[in-house]
Length: 274
Image (cartoon, rainbow, N blue to C red; front, side):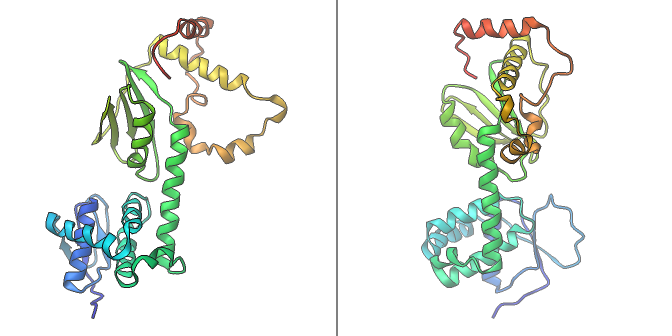
């Protein structure tokens, strides 16, 4: 019989660490009131049990999920961990307990609160990552494409394959300011690394020229008679505008040479791909 103890699990904040929390819950036949990562400030009112990450326990849980619930459930749990859902660890624990009991059918049990809440969180994660595939803007610094984002969810793992396949011959870096992480790519090699802050130099004249060309293109391509700010807000939410070149006006207007200079760069057939 399960003991719904007044115990808090403290883990290292990793997915493997969470799997060890699941193992501990089953091994001790207890359900914690909270599962916390060390970087989440909380007023702790209950006893704390520190859960160490054990590779053997991780492997046992990883093997058991597709065996008991199917491979779709394993992918779902991984994605649920990337969401910004408050108390996602407890919801994942509840989902997995149901999965071990009901098998693959747990993926269809949307009437259950834990399953339904996780499905909505994963849908939000996927929608946000999809939007960043279209809204992310790169600038060139020292022959490296650099883009910045401030997502609610941890979307870098979902963006990784898309951009690595889209720019296979480029060097690029996507900085996630929210989570202090970055996706770094060198031809055919990629890694997600911790980056506390990213301080970029001022863009050179060539980069400024390209930015002005893009702003000019965005402005002139509009059909004036169909101007619809509300429609734009629906398809391009304002929180994404901060790092989008077409909305990020320079502090000072560039001279007309910026436009002509950029046009010459395009006409010359520059090898630099935007």
